[in-house]
Image (cartoon, rainbow, N blue to C red; front, side, top):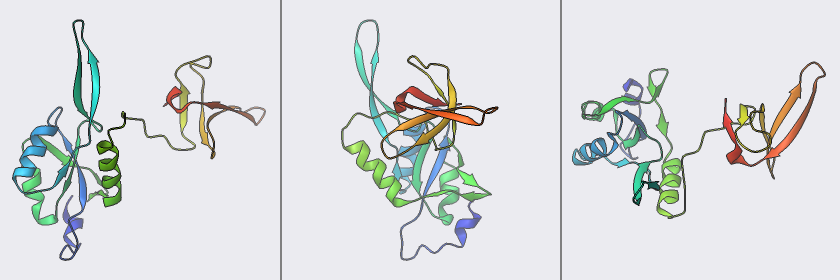
Length: 175
């Protein structure tokens, strides 16, 4: 997995960010272990209210459950993989998927803003979606976006005709 990183030069630049898959509910333990080993980590924690019968409590949860971000080089791969709780490095074609610094910085700024946030499905234009609430609940279509709105396109293939209905983004989920 890490062999592709061996050819990268890190002398004049910082180590790349990689995403680590960790065991369930092990994010804090892995984050602490990697930090104690001298590696920079980032876990985007957010606050969520949980209601019990006798109280309401504010809890911290990971925006990306089961993942943490870590800056590491090829030479540090064994140190990373030997941390208790680390399952594997997110990779494509046996190469670690590096995460651009600006994406990590955007996440950091978002989390530190204090503004309300929650995890959200990753939706792409052209993806099949289902409307989950409201008068159109259960309708499936294709996600379309323009500058002003999110729309679900419903088609009648036999007629080769479609209609686009504007929906709130929180009404849809991927199929």
